[in-house]
Image (cartoon, rainbow, N blue to C red):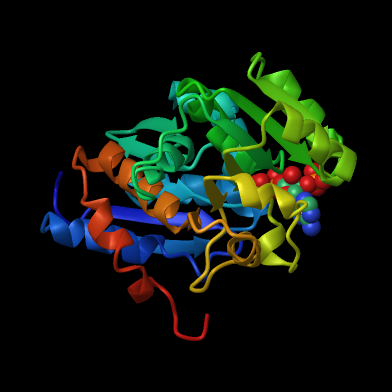
Length: 291
Ligand code: ATR
């Protein structure tokens, strides 16, 4: 890679993005002088932003909420090249621009799978999974999770609409769907207790951001081996706090996944694999003291 190449992340909101800091660490590791900016981009400005980044000679950029699916649509309309994993998620978090050739990818799913190395090399193979939420975050991780062949994946969502969309997109005998209210009823808990409770519970909703509740009947936490919240903050999220209060000590937030997906983007752009463990283990340096 040439030194002083330009990268960026676009999204809305974007001010708290940790991507510039993470990519700076990656660059420093390989003694590359790259720049990595963040640009607040409303969805109505996305097309103009993409064109301007291309015109300004950016080598690549990340796309974050809420623009990942819109970026996919722009790429489809313009005939850009996509990775298989980006097609499966129908969303884009990484754009690579090399000699005018544009390539769209999605590293969220592989980032999630790699983050499983972090809690003592947890292996999802043959495990019973519960994923709460059926939105963009779930779409991003579902393909790569199916690829490691868990025993089953139950997806539970607050409302029906997004369940129907996911069911259309992912067709696998490992998948089943239900509504959160049904999952949380005692009779359903008893049914699962008879057929086998969940080994891994993943919060893929956007609810940790706005509210303090456990989302699911906390009895499910007692039996799980690993609880993951894709959201992250300096302190334990309310979801993970509840899980620990109910006796599950193996909990992980979305910070390792954030670093791993960034490392995969960096690899696409530079061909270099950063030491992600080093960065994950100094996570406090990435959080403002007030957060
Ligand atoms: P993202 O891209 O972050 O996944 P999204 O596509 O808007 O965002 O999806 C948000 C997910 O979080 C949805 O599954 C949503 O449930 P609905 O489909 O019923 O809207 C879920 N969600 C958000 N707030 C929630 C809450 N307070 N309780 C339960 N689920 C919530």
